[in-house]
Amino acid sequence: MAAKKGLLAAVLLLSLLSSPLPSRAQASSSFPVNVWPKPTSMSWAEPLAAMPVSASFRIVGTSGNSPYLVSATQRYTALLFAERYRPIVRPAVNVTAGGPALQSLTVSVSDLSAPLQDGVDESYALEILPTGVATITAATVWAAMHGLETFSQLAWRGRQGELLVAAGVRVEDKPLYQHRGLMLDTGRTYFPVVDILRTIDTMAANKMNVFHWHITDSQSFPIELPSEPMLAEMGAYGEDMRYTVKDVKRIVEFAMSRGVRVVPEIDAPGHTASWAGAYPEAVSCAGKFWLPDASDWGSRLAAEPGSGQLNPLEPKTYEVMTNIINDLTSLFPEGFYHAGADEVTPGCWETDPSIQADMEKGGTLSQLLEHYVRAAGYRAIVSSASFYYLDCGHGDFVGNNSVYDDQRSDYKTDGGSWCGPFKTWQRVYDYDIAYNLTAEEAKLVIGGEVALWTEQADSTVLDARIWPRASAMAEALWSGNRDASGRKRYAEATDRLNDWRHRMVGRGIRAEPIQPLWCRTRPGMCDMVR
Image 1 (cartoon, rainbow, N blue to C red):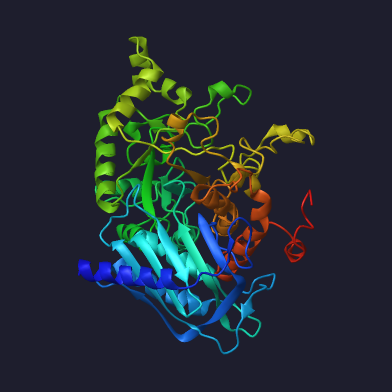
Image 2 (cartoon, helix red, strand yellow; image 1 turned 120 degrees about the vertical axis):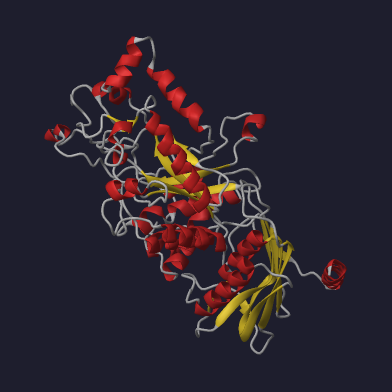
């Protein structure tokens, strides 16, 4: 079988090399139809042309296909024929009447068994020949999915509603960073499973590969765990606001089918007020008002309403944590687990009698946190609140705030949001995650995550809070935010992101607009500089 594959590849390569090569427009600027995120390398033969997609078009995989590749080819075949995208600006391309139509797309994968894990090879190449044949050559199944997404974005509906695809296109692509994630907080707000699936599906379309699921927080514990059923029983918002074992398996499998890893997070030792209903002995300062003295921020028992954090001196803490981690290990195939450990508030522990007694013996709060973390021992991934927090800029959610007695109190400031102002797509896109690092330090940066904390977000605004700003990060981490000369390319990206947002909306994603339609129909007229 290996010999046959090698012979086939050699014959294919020979046929390509023996064909005359037309001049090609390179991806240094936008094409009439673009791909998001922008590929590492893309060329389109001139004069730019498109061809119709045959009604009998099919995607063909290599023998011995994985079930994930089979489902992906079926999904993208259906997506292609369901495509209703019409570019805002009509593409200036030649469509030859009566010419060849695209008959098939052949997908070839070098390693069908490579698992979906951190650092998996995501490189692929795509060729759409004007003769009516297209090929994807991918290192892994997960890379092939990226190739299929790129192919799908090169199709559109013509003037008469006919399905067209770019012809004479060559793409060679791979990500700049291996970790391109989105964190969603379901502890403060419960999101139905369908919302999570839609979000993961859109992540895959943006070539994002890590869904960081911040499952629990002080406000609720919405996941049912076999070894600790009382946590959800007492900590969820309600019976219809829990993720069952079946739900979790459905989410994980759905994500796997899209090439997206699911990294679970159970935040601790802070943000654990929701545990107190099941285990009051393990949670310090539970049920106490979070800010005893409004004039003294240092007196707070929590970073926000919902006080309670695990007591590191209580044996029950480690018994419960061990059970939780064991359950998560069986539910999630992912090799990483996010342990939280943020915003531990000294004031909370200082109210606990057992901790007070320990401190009277010479113990310190720093030693308490060190004691807890050395029991956990797991790696963590962090994103920047200054660039990647998608909830910022919507004000604060606390009530009875006397700062608003003065109508000018937050004028020209952060607008009441601790991490304000609002993070525009340009700010997200412009962020260099390895900025000011040495070459050796930069090698340790494996990627980034945008984050949506949900004090003020639910299903009604989910899509718009995330997209297309998360798309901006997706491209910056996939192919960078600079052109070949090293210049930031956010100006060139504007029209492309407008188009991608338009296509996402057509796919059922309620992404927020970034400009009036007038701007896209008059390229350059809304720029600051011509």
